[in-house]
Image (cartoon, rainbow, N blue to C red):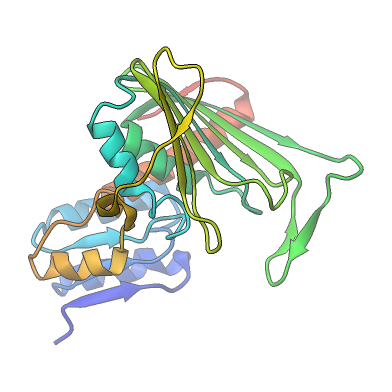
Length: 267
């Protein structure tokens, strides 16, 4: 018998495919987005919650290249109190296509629940702003997308996505806290992740060496298999269905806010 199923077809079909898989007693790892809407995600989350003995996970929206390699080190710094209470955070991404879900996924697991959001989108129609099309992906719109959100614990986080920054721009997260600050640049296939930090009162950022025990990233498939076997719980960086629901809800409220030009509360 097959104990687990990986759902990796087009997102539109996930809402039809996942319920039978759960009903048949199979663990589920969903690739890409869980489904299309927050309403659908609520239904799938309820089905998964009704069968807590099954492992129901979603592959991280940004994939391994988007702060999965850096998860253990950042978690260590936050849990160890290096920055103290988080006052302000900023998440920058420069991918060819808007990936607010990927950015929110990182922000929510590192900084907690978001309570309200202000969304903004700016397109560019000026000479030199045109972005070359990617093979097989079509035209890339030259634009900047911004989301500003209040955190339940009192801080403020800003998400900024840009398609016009150029290939040399690296995704990064900046964290400013009551005790210090941290800046992390995401690694990629050719460049390792780098961390910089400073305690409150310092004038300069200094490199933060990554201890060997925090150098290894999160491995989604290995966590899924280990969870099925009862060996350990998946890392916090691997989204549960409820995390995917919050991601979709955040995207829908961002769109509402950007269209009306004002703050919107998150449910």
